[in-house]
Amino acid sequence: MKHMAALLTTLCVGLPNGMALAAEATSAASDNRASLLHIVLVGGLLIVVGNVAIFFAKRKMEKDAQAAKEKADAERQEKNS
Image (cartoon, rainbow, N blue to C red; front, top):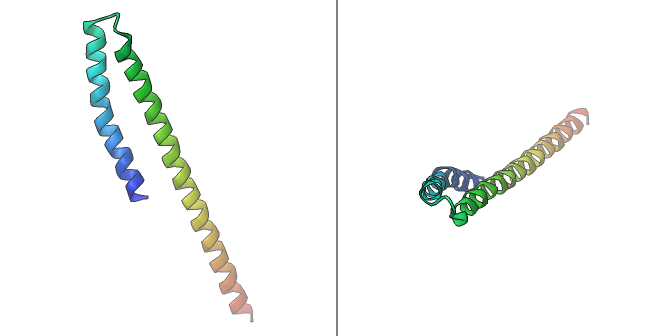
């Protein structure tokens, strides 16, 4: 999980710089569609990475909740015996 957080942080810090460079290139040459495409692709990549990080975090939380429920049930059965 720490690796995903580090990756997401790196992407959030590093990619906007590339987007700013691409936006500057777009303003310098208005017919340059490659830089606009770069902005769109980077934005899409950020969305995908964010969704993947959310998916893994959600799955981990569900596993932790299930493990806690099983532990509580086991303790309750042990206490009742």
